[in-house]
Length: 165
Image (cartoon, rainbow, N blue to C red):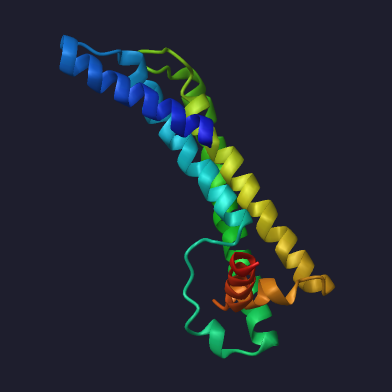
């Protein structure tokens, strides 16, 4: 992600400088920076999913007990898996079309751009499935269950202790 972001910054900043100083730009960098942004967004979604940091509404879940929280967690993860399956299927259906469409400037197959749907759907779906498995086998940590309900008090205490030491 850092490399994609750095490349985007270099390409966009370079184009701004070239347009300002020489009234020209590099067309390839415009196209590639757009594609890098797409990949950066989807890779970021998977990374944030791994850290359980996606937006959530904990108003109801925080009022439930342990069993209710686990039920909500499993239900939300089943919903995530369903969405990932639809996303994967849509990417699969479009793959042949995207493989034969080429970018106007770089002439790379658009499957390299839109194929990120495979990565994101598999990554997020596997993480949700593994979390369901941890819930069902009793291996879900108390910290993860509290974080699902919006309780990050352990994180704050740990961070505060780390700063004081």
